[in-house]
Length: 235
Image (cartoon, rainbow, N blue to C red; front, side, top):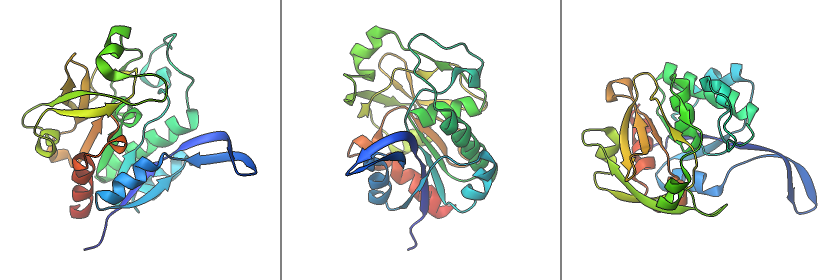
């Protein structure tokens, strides 16, 4: 059986050191490509490019993953920056929003992870909570800097996510922002115990479009990525 080709958006770092080299780099935590491979797909990294190239890129893919990373620039959803909102990644914002729009137009299966879920919501006209209350952090949305924590996520019955993960599951997480107003057509398909939206999706009639707020690439549960790979294989 042919493995579907899954593109994954990457970070763009202006200065990375490895060995004797200190150069700009397009990079991605290995958990992303390993998760795609373990779930049965072929992984391809998609560094930031001219947004006009997004449609030509997506048409060559069987599925798309928009990865985690920096906070989305608030102007993208009509807001002023919160004091706790981090510096924007302008090239990533432009490129990944173009990828999402191209995937939605082409019907290419799409999975947003953390920042990717937030960008999916913004692409469809939704807004973000720029900083969850500090008390929420103690409930497990963000641990110490650079350390994933975990908390339970409860699926909404009847959703695509619930079809993949029907039980309450403990997930690896690291985020301080979240979905506020849902974008056009989106529905929440999982929540944390404090009510934070943890997964979003379009109706199944719109094809495979899902976002999760946590980081499945940092855990051992393959089911979310397997659902994307299955959709990409059958598309």
